[in-house]
Length: 97
Image (cartoon, rainbow, N blue to C red; front, top):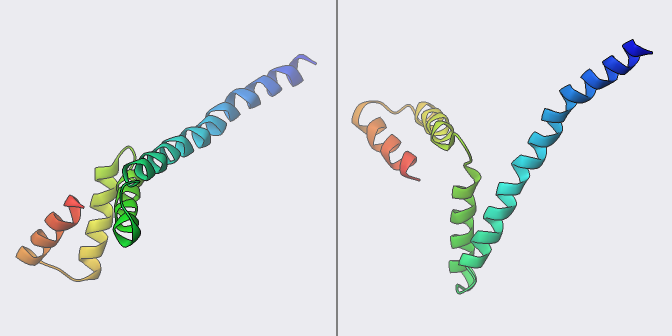
């Protein structure tokens, strides 16, 4: 009986971090989408769509966003076989967003 109770408590304790991390991840994105929509209310048509796309793209980068940008930009530079000054210019532009 005690072993079963202890095992259940340990299983619950180990499951908590996994269940809360999923909830934490979705909230900032929802907030960012709401904020982007609010900021773009005054815009219309294609201009609004572009502003929303840019805002949501920037909001998609959470903690460690610079690291994610570096990974993506490096992969793109490698795929395009860029070297030297071309690579530096590409990386600079890519990392600025």
